[in-house]
Picture (cartoon, rainbow, N blue to C red):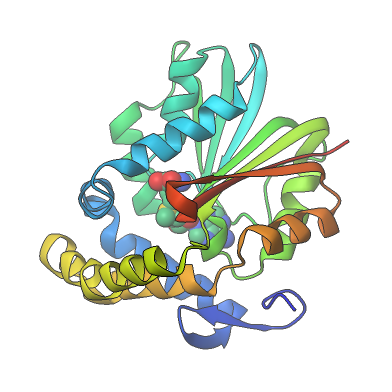
Length: 251
Ligand SMILES: C[S@@+](CC[C@H](N)C(=O)[O-])C[C@H]1O[C@@H](n2cnc3c(N)ncnc32)[C@H](O)[C@@H]1O
């Protein structure tokens, strides 16, 4: 049974909290780390998060004159890559945390003819868009932080056009036992310490490593997407399953 779908309680790392509490706690996490978010990603992943994000946009292969909602878009890494790949995509970044949006705007600009990005502070569970609006929705390392995965997927499904596509980039399960042990040991022993040194915030990075372990694995997420109505769902493992990209269509 996949947790976090039919009840008011949810997980915040290894803690059980109400859905409402989780939203506030997640906002605190990302407000606290926003100015060091990019450098922490580079440091703790040895720069590999860039390869994962490139892989997402490669698989997406966005077409000209289309629209994309980059949900939980944070500091704009995915939006930036989509535009680099195809400047003819109309990109809308939505994120819960104003400080993350602030960093993103500084990084890739306020939006112009060349960089048509709109930045919106908002909750992915109540998107300020009408039904059937977007050709694509991308969400990178975001879904895990939502208070209710099923409701988030339903809301994404609502705003996608018929024929629209969702791509989810998220931490997943490493099937190989020895590699998993190595990865767990690095995650729990090193990442929170790095968070303390670089972002002066051990707790937020402790939350990160715990939240990864609570998030559904490859097959479970596929099932959750199918239950929401997505079709033709496929996933690709990256870095031995440390991360997976799921793709599904609203048909
Ligand atoms: C780990 S960051 C990912 C940022 C970016 N997508 C990336 O790949 O670097 C997760 C982001 O999810 C956002 N977030 C969490 N819950 C959200 C929600 N309910 N609605 C919108 N954004 C949310 C956070 O504010 C944070 O910026």
